[in-house]
Image (cartoon, rainbow, N blue to C red; front, side, top):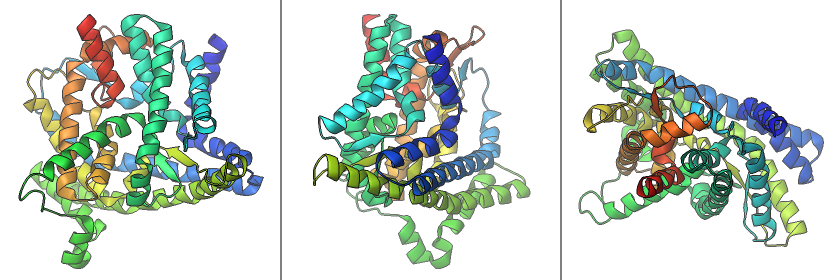
Length: 419
């Protein structure tokens, strides 16, 4: 078991950037592609994902002075906010991870070949969305079997939900042959945003309000293009947080650059994913049936190519920070939670069909729930970190996963009820 855990950890330590090209290469060969095209597809996916990470990091660095301005206002926070990267890495160290991962892969293939499902989830790094609830259940109830069952069950739900949202994902983002299989966002953020939009449809005045990036470009001409919108939003954030002129300009240029570069990185990824998707569908029609189809399940980050997502992110970050001072009984400053804001906006924007007003309402509500729940479930989150062997030095800790992963929330509530 220790050997399997070591092998699993070594693979995961490679990171998605190094792991994705290898996975895409193997899939390409399985689906009948020649070595050269399959390798090229893998490299393009890896290059695009690397670029996407660099641009997201640029956004984080650009917004840092804004975050610092608000963080100086907060005192007396006693709980650590470790961020999703720490939680994800910790989840791979649970004893049953080497057993759960092959079962997740096997379950995916069973769903495809026996139950005619259409999603192949290649996003191995985001297995953390399954492992964290499993590890949480293991930490709270002491059952390895329960942990494995919950982990695999989450992976099955992710495939089914990914298939459900695939047509709208492909239609809105133009990402043909793909879907999003990131469990937390497709089972929590998207349903919530869909419900919010249904409610907005019943509110006179608000339901007619429609502000989107295309409207801005049509009405404002060149000044409505993504680069200028990013510049304006960045300068505005710098001004309201009383930054020096150089930081104001850097913030504006940074957000402007992000709005332009992210779609470029997504298009590079799609150059690799498209031939894999075509080969997969050809293979499926040959071996399963003429009407068979297969979509590649990918990271939610693929949706960040829409400029509305980054615009909502820039506006939501200071609002998310403000929740630390608005929500009663807050014990942590949401610095780690900020790293998931951009990913949360993806399905808020998709459910709102690009309407910035609706997208912002959905994003702000989503982030409020995430910050609130992560604060409510600090004891359970700490139990999760302790069972993974992470040394907290006797402190309490939490993370956004305990506010936006629906399985985590349900497990925490059940634990409270049966105590």
